[in-house]
Image 1 (cartoon, rainbow, N blue to C red):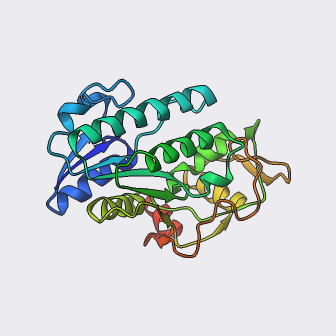
Image 2 (cartoon, rainbow, N blue to C red):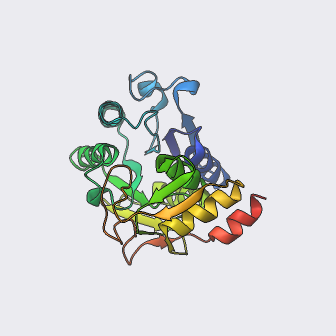
Length: 248
């Protein structure tokens, strides 16, 4: 089948395209640098001709509240309209485990809006909720750094390898729409400070990581388990220890 991957040249999208092509599907990487811009609508009608599935793994270039809301509102509206006109039978979107519990943060309010638009569109859909990627440990640290100290909330996290997320997205794309959420997470649960500490060690980053009982996660105050998936989550094969060993 033909599968159009919006954000198909990024970290997850490029892996999704590769996995789908390996299994004999026609996966098309769609992004601004391939002439397709979901925010403006440029190139959508042409790239969706003959497509059975659209996978949206795009992300906003800015996490500022207004900018991220505008990005997901415009891109999702344009995609859903173009899909309806092209007769696309399945819309797959990548989102975040715990989105509905993180509504104090503008980014997650925007993601919730995106999910609500998909649910109300009439296009059969599947939403893949992933935990944070191994590769994002440094980004999480940067968001919580003051001087040489990283202060993180006393919460748990079950991070996942981006390749395992891509595999889950690809499997979901070629399956029947679930008209609901599929969760994917890594095999190990960490305290947030331990994950950040291990992630910085991969980069030989000397910053000190401490726990702050008042710490926020992208602006949201969390309960200890808010970032953890439910009991039915698909568990990735790659452990953080195995992934980090390959980075050295």
